[in-house]
Length: 392
Ligand code: NZQ
Ligand code: ZN
Image (cartoon, rainbow, N blue to C red; front, side, top):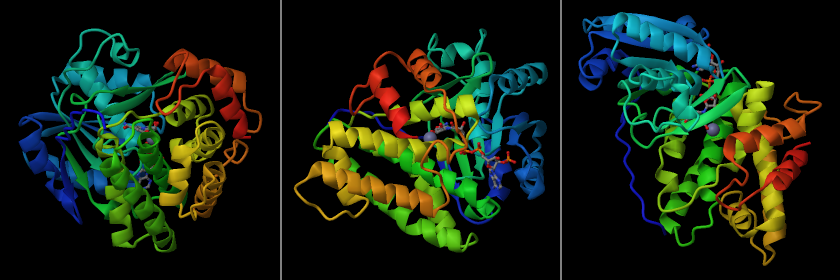
């Protein structure tokens, strides 16, 4: 087990009706702001009345509200520049995101950009490391990206369609996250499923590791994955099952707030490969991962089957034999069947990509992430090309 520092400073406020506390939380944890920028998505929060309720709670504390809305899935840099300019113009020193990963990641990028004199993209391009950002609070509406508890932000630069994930252990973590599972009742089944695939992937990216003797972190990860797989069918049967929604919501946060990575090297190739799919083809991130992960696992079952075999046995319930390769393949089949059962595609054409430009995907992947990528096993362009082809 490796040495590590683990700090998750976010205050999670979880349960029915907790969005009514947003104003109080903003005052207490966002440094007593006079003005706040509320960042929101397309329409769901407005339509459900959530946006209005939260604004009422915030203005009730004497805080003036400014808004930037219409943030789309796979958010882009143009909206970040817009938000930074708005904050500077009105001297806004606190940000509140109401939505999912796309909204929260945009809020984080704005928070970072306001405190930096240069171009905010410098952080995503790796020219600067994030140390200072405006304080952020969030009201989560979809359990998926885990951005409510993570130090990450993923933004796409429109020029060249570069989708880049920025990771900062401290500067970007929200000060508070308001989490009412009832707010997720309005999610379409496909978005619910995408969220489930994404949170599972966040655990799996950390689970597939070359580090040995991390039994505690392994146990947490396997337990979380088994719980998600057990709860998911209840949720699709009854989308207003509070306890199912609540368990999935909390799992999404635990999946990505760092606890599943403590003491070990992480992988993250599947995310990098998916980010190229969503940047180029605009697919939902979670659906992309349901296609990428089985292909990556199939490659690993051939070349490094020990962890895929353990995953098959401990998470997917495959009876153990002495054949790692065979057990790993059986686990992959069960994983695909699970994705399929919740309405997700497991191939590129199922994702609506009939003629994938594999050459372009591989080129962009290695341009953005480096010549050799991966923590579980090191992969070059020949290997990632094979994995993209396994998705067909
Ligand atoms: O925009 P609205 O109208 O709100 O609709 C959204 C959007 O269409 C809808 N939605 C959200 N809450 C809803 C709802 N619809 C009905 N009822 C609700 N309660 O869901 C759609 C997807 O929203 P989005 O925010 O895009 O989803 P998600 O949370 O999956 O975020 C995806 C983005 O996060 C990035 C992804 O790459 C992608 O860009 N990620 C961010 C990470 C991070 N910051 O730590 C890690 C992840 O690995 C991921 O890469
Ligand atoms: Zn993800």
